Image (tube, helix red, strand yellow):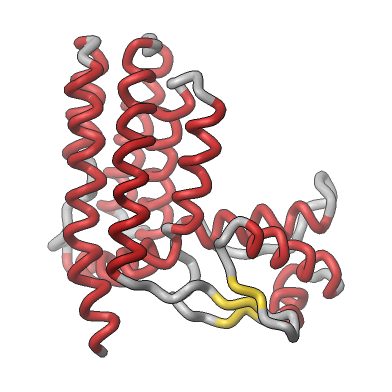
Length: 231
């Protein structure tokens, strides 16, 4: 399941494995806003010594994904409406541009990949797997952005999504009980609009659909953030 932590494979360095798993888990909202992550607990989970965990936490702190204390433990950043708005303003600009660029470079193989991801996303919604569903949402977005051909934009977007992690946690906590009752539809309406626009070669429409996708989620997250801060 997306976001689950597991022992590190020998196919990569231990430090890199810890870093990548923690990074992925943070990006899909596996941890609560403000949650403390201790080196000892993470080392036990990963089956490693303290050193690779400490190194991974430092790398993630350098990316503004975590806040590291003087004692070495790390904390997931707290949420705020102002920070959420700031992140989404940046996302609208860079992800909208990446989508427009991707439309001009779109081909049949890339379109088929997008359609496959959307189908997987919707199937996971039916099966009530919230973290895997959110992981497929991420996969769709990055499949679009990779098609832009811009390494710089892709790096900026990746950094923004990493810092967006605490808000994804609020989203997953909200969605999970709705999925269990069948009262929630997957977030794929705008994804279909993006694909349709790309099939027509309409970069402006694809960009507008991506911006709408980001802003619709922002509206919900602002409510969840305000509720979280008042509780």
